[in-house]
Figure 1 (spheres, rainbow, N blue to C red):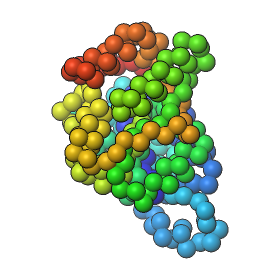
Figure 2 (cartoon, rainbow, N blue to C red):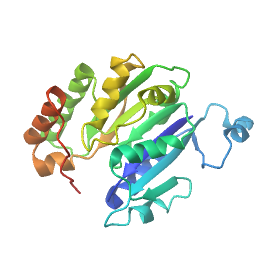
Figure 3 (tube, one colour):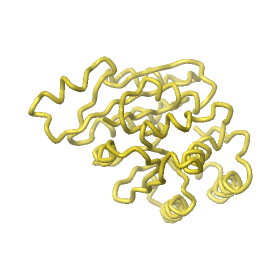
Figure 4 (cartoon, rainbow, N blue to C red):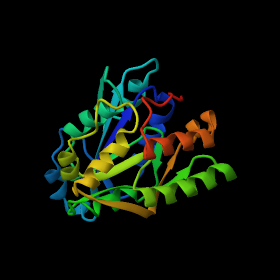
Length: 243
């Protein structure tokens, strides 16, 4: 089973679309937290289908992100005054039952077939990685930037918008560093690779569409330089919130 964990803070504008895209995936059975997967596997009509659970962890803010999520009863909702994205991810992972964990940004949309592709790795135990990303803007600047961004992820073994791994890799790493407000995703991957808990996997035959709002607001060059500085030197104390 694939467990999708989405941290969300003031994402009322985006989270509903993200959930709708997930629930629209073909040949996927979504389970609530109190449903037993074996009850579904025993039904011959479900042969060839894969299983998934979605958990959204909302850090309370000034909008109604919780209200946007509660419209989907199939989604597990946890809300509270959490310290940041790392704590939110770790809280979601703690209740997840899947073999494969997917940590997904609230403004990122999985294209059809993504969940089934991840389910193919459920019997592998040493992988961590990301996938091809597409921009939500059909501009030359956005497309060229994301093309280069994908190549950079392959070379540098980094991620943006989503990270997937086996549950055992997550456990060995010990989760995301809750003391970090930025660069925690880079550290998560680096710890796994440095200690040989998992091998980096980039999947190019499936993709997700992610928001370019940060690049449009802060500038493509400025944002890219910030990320390069975080990779080669030291991550910033925090990234400016863009809504």
